[in-house]
Each structure stands twice: as structure tokens, then as C-alpha cells.
Amino acid sequence: MVRVKVGITLTEDTLARLEEICKEMGLSKSQALSMLVNKEYLAKYQDEKKVFKA
Image: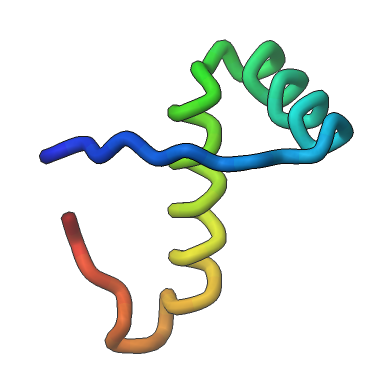
């Protein structure tokens, strides 16, 4: 799987929350964001034909 570098801007509060999630789960920021995006996507489109497998 090809990885693409993405730059994002977060508020200080959101960054603090992300860092807390990372610390609790032992993940990097990239891993935590990937997990959260994929979890949300699958929850929203699980029953629709929009779900794709990478």
C-alpha cells in the first residue's frame, strides 16, 4: 500500500486530544488518525456499497 504524506492544521485542543489517544493506545499520530478515519468511514458506510478494500 502506497503511503501519501498529508499536512493538517489542528487546534491546540484537538492536538492535545490526539496526543492523549496516541499515548493511551501506543500509536503514532499517523496511525491514530488513520484508525479514526477508517473507523468512522466503516461505521458510516458499512451497509452501503461505498465500502472499498484497500
